[in-house]
View 1: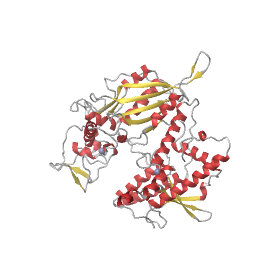
View 2: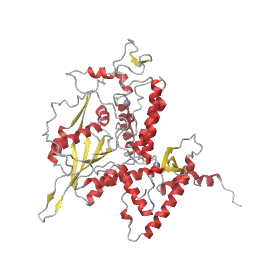
View 3: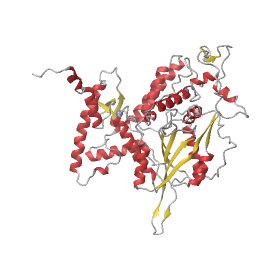
Length: 533
Ligand SMILES: [Zn+2]
Ligand SMILES: [Zn+2]
């Protein structure tokens, strides 16, 4: 007979759910696997397959995040010191990628039919957005629907206070210069670069403003919103200056003061003087309508006019100027809404292939990738908390995009207006506390970096595993795949899926250990990327 337990003793026992989750994580298994149904076209048999969720944040799925980070490190390593031009041959899409794109196509058609019939499309739009995310996570580059082109390109207008840069034609090569030492050995140095945003006011050692009242929170909010465009501009300028198709691998992270900065691995080198020159000449002008004067506060919001699908001024009953009209109203004497620039301070060091420095820099570049932006520097003092609060408050009413609900506050109808838009409640990622104004990608990699996508690097890893385990790759034409949804009779609830993950990983781990023991001379250092599949 089991002895009677006290309540405290029972509470001290591990919770079954947590044990399963911990086991899954220990074994490198995904904690939110996606359930797919695989049908063998020859036999008609169906099988349940659990595919990793592919999230990059450890708070969502530690195993997938760790795997993604390892793949990024492999990608960074492979591209940094290439000494031959990478050959770009996009891989053929795999079954999973094809399946998501097929579902996306069906969803688009349903959505467009519903739209033509005058029905509400919001649910289908949401589904399409979710599928787009799945498509990206499965390793497909770009979007199935191209973003609508902007109507005008005013941002090329040159500012008077920015020095001109020499513009050389950009040769198609991507490999930097080779140097020969007196003893005849050749080497090809690369670079590790850290770029920061401009100053918004003096900060103390803990990253908080010395004088919060004097700190420019408006610019501190606008710079991250446009940081990705600024970075693009920098690369363009660098390429023109060096005269070849310079390649980079960049990680975007916040500094302690919560402004974004970029760690950049660059193939080849640029002199400090050239860097200084490019940084001084690089700016991004935001040609948006004015957003300085509040025309409609929360007590006085524009009103949705259903028949026209537009917003009205509550006082005059007139239509608000539409986004495109507001853009047209920007005159030749008006300035841009914002000019984003990098700070003058930067850090640059030369790095040689295979050196300890190179390994250290790669660790540095990928260090925070499994964390959300806001989690990189958690506030531990009241001053840090206040600083974060003030930045989020400044971001709240800042327009994040042409479609941002905040435009209503400044008397302009956002692009693609919908009913129920409310300033201060825009759902754009940039406004969220965990994004700190930056909604772009955390890793920016140029196209000819390693010549491989993340999916290619993942596939390298898979091929290695299949070979090690002595498994033949399955014939893709033999199966069809479909996602299993909660209404389906074979749908597995999350708890059951997790048990399957643990069992699968154990089997797989045992097989791998055995295969390794069998193969003589095979060391774990042969693993191309990461410690788990
Ligand atoms: Zn996962
Ligand atoms: Zn917004």
